[in-house]
Image 1 (cartoon, rainbow over the protein chains, first blue to last red):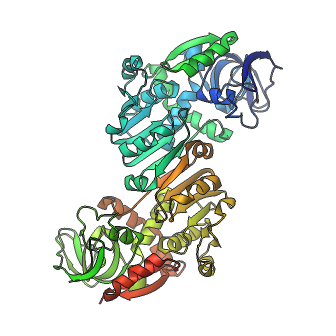
Image 2: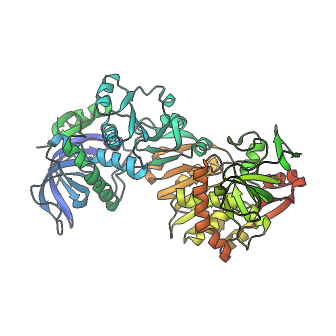
Image 3: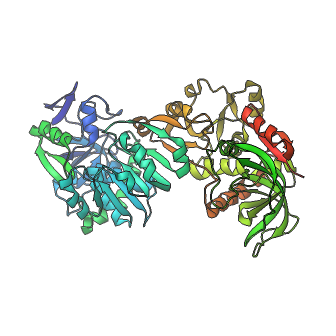
Length: 313
Length: 313
């Protein structure tokens, strides 16, 4: 099979041996695979794949058809359309996934959308509800509302009855983010808004002092992206005064049981919203595997609405 | 009535008008009132009393007898022994308390112990269980294990089936903290212990980098004391990698309903342990109201096991 391949920071397309599914696993012919910030970090050598994932094939999410099943894998049949998260290896023509890390693809989703759904909606749902405990009527601030996780978070929070504000750097995208259900604002001066019950941090440490300033009493900050930098000064007395908390989270390094649990939450609470049309999966641009370098460049450029997705034959 | 009084950083004993209980409140003849770190901060002008509390009388906890009741106050009868937390005003001969911020005093507790129970056990119980969600079998690190909240936390965590390590700066106190159920260690090099599921931070920001280093996957840090300083650099990528969270908390500024809820937790889960003798309230030293200055000096000196308590006639 052919796969996007990272060697010493070089991104190429190379031939790899076809993987074979083990017990409880499915082999998926990948049709679409979304890009994520973690892929960019991995290319720069700052985010190695966790044990068990292919070390040199990036890709945390994919969608495709089941073409073979390992011993005891019974959740799906051959030919079923699935979307999944994985510790790595998604940006390839074939991928092996544990069946409990996969979800059925709703009929309303085409391949590009399906390929960009699993990681961002699982990340957003887990961060907002499982970790931050977002409740109806609460005020949410999403930093980076136009990106993949951002557009997912805005929509699922809005569908859950939260009032959503989102920072969007590119002013040409604010209208589209407003259509998803948020009040879209420029990043500058966000700390004058609020107070917010929950803040989803997808940008990085430079926002932390402002986040603490605009956090409401009993508020929660969940940090899942630090592209703008990881280190910030934290005033613990301010955190105490707000009776606030700061969560850090990633999906990638979690054990299977935790990923599976998070995905069951998405199946129960998000897939019905996608099926009804209440929530959609914005795809900014697609690229064929041959153009994977262009896809990464487009991702790094930013200023897009939703996902960058690789398409595979 | 006479009361400890803070004016512009000066601590004296002065005459004040007797307070009168309003609806739902009780008037308590104070017999003992514990000192807390917040009193020290208030004397230095860094922690003003919240609205509704006496601005110039310190004291967050007290024990004494009910001597009068306001309209609708039915939880206690005149003469009942109660212990309570308050936003301020505890270090006085009389104090008005909402009846739902008071608890009955177990028969096994004398006045000095009762006067040093409410704040520290409510703080420790709320931090460990309500916020950090400490579970049986988990590993807890308490920074500042010999102090008031520290000795309370060590004991209630141990009684709940946690495995407890405590840093104790004064090496002469480590044996006593071990008797309370912890493995007592020097603060230096604590980050080489662990991993810990929960870290209770009673010392301050300088511990934060080490806390993050020794935090286990999915671990929780609860910060409720920053005497050693409030500001630290936080590496969000490290927090993400641990999938950790940092809580800041104080009891003092909370609304009555939240304080009352926390105290009901103490009544249900801690008072039975005190009654059975499984948990005790170490009192390092007592001082009469006339010697309140000496009491504060002793508190600031540190190196004590448990509480410094003012006794009132």
